[in-house]
Image 1 (tube, rainbow, N blue to C red):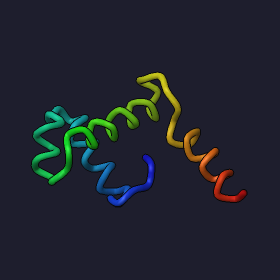
Image 2: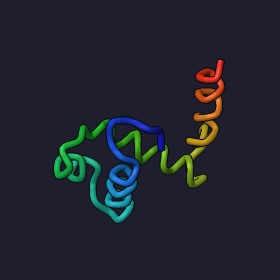
Image 3: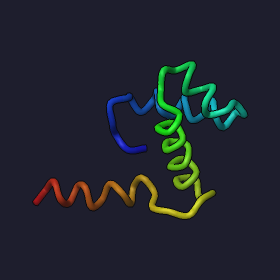
Image 4: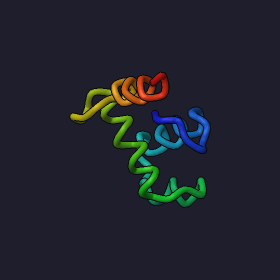
Length: 70
């Protein structure tokens, strides 16, 4: 997932709770997150796992790293 203010392990665990069958709104409330932000994490996880079309986290990171080098 994309780096941000939350540690990667926290994001992974939050997404895992949703993947286990809990609702996004419920998990977001319990963890003090916005439901929209958590939905984005879940969507990106689905892309990374190949279940949804889009650019993976790795593909998104490559142009960012190149811009930083320049």
